[in-house]
Image 1 (tube, one colour):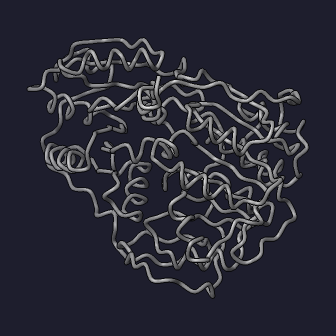
Image 2 (cartoon, rainbow, N blue to C red):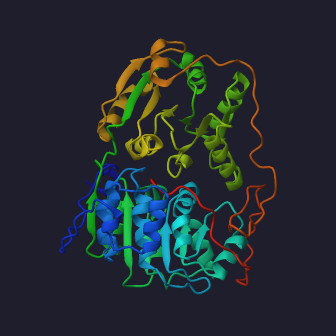
Image 3 (cartoon, rainbow, N blue to C red):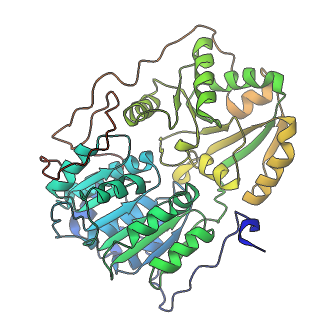
Length: 464
């Protein structure tokens, strides 16, 4: 079989370590961690480690390379975050030279990781910089120039800063690749490889991924040394707390069905294929009385950040998103995800569905399927290892209400405040850019004599 005909979802055997890993623990107190971290865990009510944390932390804290496989929402952020902080305790970064690097595929995931780790970073008296596209380069350069021990970055923007000589990786001692499978799916493999080649030799590397296809496997074999491997969830990512429904609909009734689902009492993320489709649907939902907003790559980063905040606070009830949001969004209590268009493959399905049923909570994933899409959906579910409940529905059906909480829209048009109301301003107390109008995107080379910056504000800790 040649390379092009290899099934895209095939997983490969990972390297077997020659040195056995340490056994899992039942309590954070069993771990050799700084007291500052244990105090923050206690203060935040994080009493017992999740399985991925219990399995990986004994080895990562001992300095071993770690390969962790687990679905999104399983607690991976704290699993690698605590190890990173313990590993660089007491170190101080030189200007533009971090000592720890966390690579993630999307801006939203970078923000989530930053918020989750900030309380622990502050407790260790360390500094953290978030490096992503969609926000001014100059502000990120200023924070890096002041010195940041930890950099949380997307590959594209970090590569840009390195090219401008505003950051270097030759002093990085601990590297994390989070959601490695999506980084390769998005075409970042060359950028990720180029970045890892600049990291100092002899450091520690941790890679976390929901699946292990041949691209992720190539990263493991090239950059991880004798890794301890932990898989705490089925590779397909299906969990017992998640219900899967395939709803057969007719084309003539699909829009009405969507409007009824979006009108439910509670928040919902609805995935759609295109940016234009998302914007059109939001217009229709607003006109029918649904508090809806779109999230996609055509929005500036300040717009995306503010829209997510509106969704978290309930100003927006129906978030219509493209796959830009399939990872990196964590909203507490979200119990329904709807695929308005079936995803491209089973991995996209799992990543979309991972927005619900996080950390043991229950949730439902619903996919609307037109007659011509049924065979393809059946194949996708087989590849994902999922047996969904299949139901034929129409708008107003009792079964649609039972499964999704659908109800008839009010028909009274609503408006949502513009998510961008002011120009971005640097908050000196938090180091973050306040949401505002999109900044210019000039490519002029910047100097590195930036002003003072500090870590982003606190956010959620466990689970992530």
